[in-house]
Image 1 (cartoon, rainbow, N blue to C red):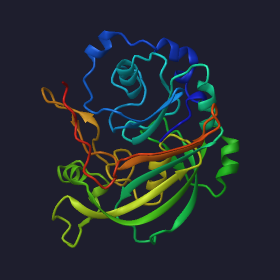
Image 2: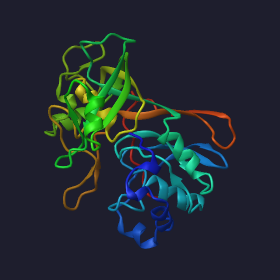
Image 3: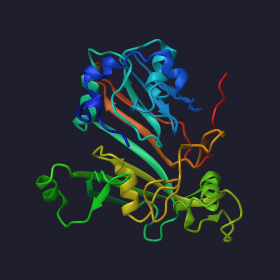
Image 4: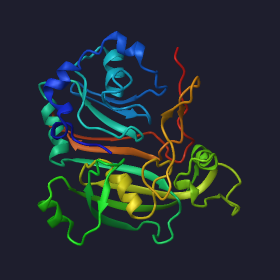
Length: 314
């Protein structure tokens, strides 16, 4: 999920952003093209809001430099100072805010640091048996960075706030989780992955609309959730849903059994972008620190629709 750019790793420092302002042409030639493109949702003098596709990183990460939302937009718009002010996980899709003006950038970063921005996500899981439609719960967890393994680890203790104060490496994660109810969704890519040997959260039996066989197609009845994070921890939402017992469909890191996901390829074959994580950043709302106006944006994505289709290079 999203993380404030100004208070994280050294990568987010202003000096690092200046160094990364111009990515040489060789990087574009070296890297494998990632066949998904961001879509501009809002275009103002100070910032852009874009809809990030899955599999396309938000920012350079060392291994991937040119094939990122930030660099693609820098090149297409001719704006070398464009910088994402928060992050979304590689596999997460949805709204991403980018600053175009270095003079005001810190003011937008502070929206995330000071929790002055409202974020809303949606996700899909198997149907829950211990929630009713419309039910909301406030979930507070203590997350450990768990450097020895992928993802983060939920630390099971009675007083997470006190434990976090004792160990600064562990972070509190606050999320309001709402079960919106059942929805008919096309999850063919998730099912294909689980049936093909790479088990995912879809290994738990699912059923198509109007049928109880569990093997009758790719359009099935699943659980639809709204997630409202009050903090911005790494993998906060994915770890929260797993802790609740309902890992997000398409998950590759959490759950009882997980499999390969994301750009992968055997020798001589094209990368396979499947299955897609059914987690999307659906809404952003904040008071513009420059104009004082209230801004609210929503993604046009339909989380129950089929997976994104890779584009072709023209």
